[in-house]
Image (cartoon, rainbow, N blue to C red; front, side, top):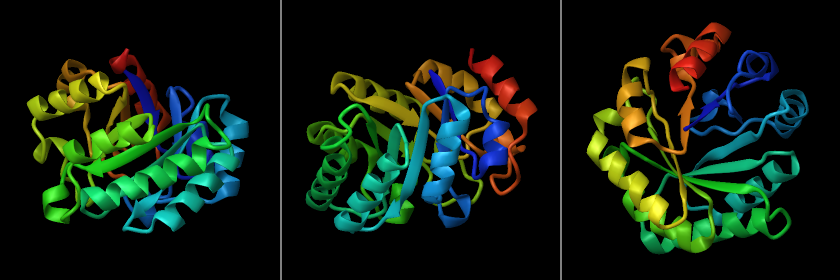
Length: 228
């Protein structure tokens, strides 16, 4: 299980370097809010680690999402991550294929992360279990679960340990990696280790519980030790 930490700026990135993957996002713009390309580029040059870049929580705008994905890949991101803030399998299939093509045509070695939301029922968006087979068929690399509404409720309040384990196993069977995120806490680590996703994504956990606060290096270090 690799640890992904999501800084919002260069100073936070410097405090996140113990993580396995540095995930550039802009929390003020949403769960998977996109940051500026020059911030992605600067953190890529600084970190010496694999860098992930969120490009947004998108409604059905495959053209806009594919252009954003292309830009993030050009800015240096190794992982390009997008959230599906809409419903409908046919629309999701078209959207995912556009994002994958935008990245992979020029950068086949880069990873495309497709995210759906554990709180999909209250959002009215596609479920993780419906999204993941579409991501696999389109040639994406990672299927992710996050929370779409950041109100302090954890992914575990919307999906059980058993269902997250089933999601992870389903993805492995389809050749996808799994990333789990969504207001997770230190108290969730035993369950997360049992589920054993490929990537654990955090921000609020290493900000002292408030994603709008700043990342604390000592909490990143503590989490790295606990993840092992």
